[in-house]
Image 1: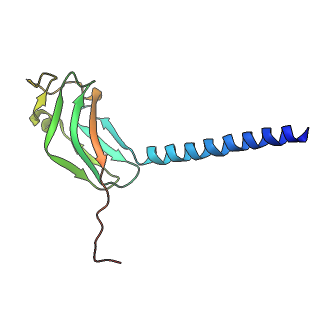
Image 2: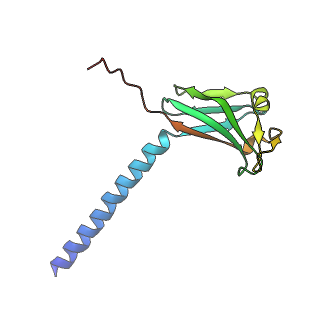
Image 3: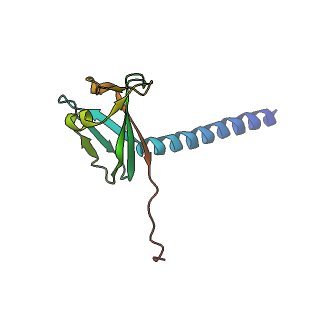
Length: 128
């Protein structure tokens, strides 16, 4: 009889431990994520709770059907204070639609998302 209670307790303990590891891993991933906010002037502000480096490559309007802009050179920022892209800078980018036709920059910046990746830290080979 006590074997049944033992197996139930062992199963419950395993589920709790597995769930705790999953939660900790997802929380750690989200803390290092890049966040974007918009201002009333239409500029975009990027920030993170951790230091970068982050490399920003594209801006996408809506679901992508409204346009996509590729930076001529990827933008790099290294610290948690982030960076800002002004409305003027967004308007200067070349925006393309799904048919690769040039379109104007979107007016509503709240629906813009960014494509980025977190760059690996460069290591000095001469340091031990």
